Picture (cartoon, rainbow, N blue to C red):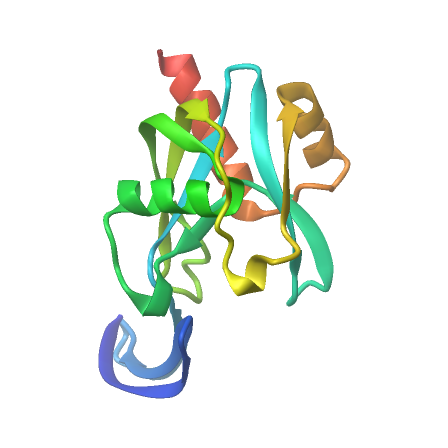
Length: 177
């Protein structure tokens, strides 16, 4: 598929939406809508036996959800994934990591968004004060055993696709060690 033309349909400080006129492999014309967002970092804070999660209200769902700390740089900026991971961890939880291990790339929704993420395992954690953004004022965070975390997945308390994919990457990383 080849892009012929592109036009911005909508933009705000967090995302842009564009509509592309495309030419398919068979030569036929089509339209593709794309949500462009900067790449994000997701962090799995772990002390070995427990995982640290954040819970916040997710407006599009109308629900509070538990997930791993994650986010993008402000103002649609791109930044180094490890630096972004350390910043998100500190901002959302107050934790500082002695070590960040890169677990790999996660594509958010490749059928509609250009956004990609990188998952990190954070270890050697020390506590500090969080510095949450205004939109995160109702966020809370807590430690959970791995058994509790997996129960929460089974019972539908954790449904964030990025958190589920990152946990899978963590399990495969541990199996490979």
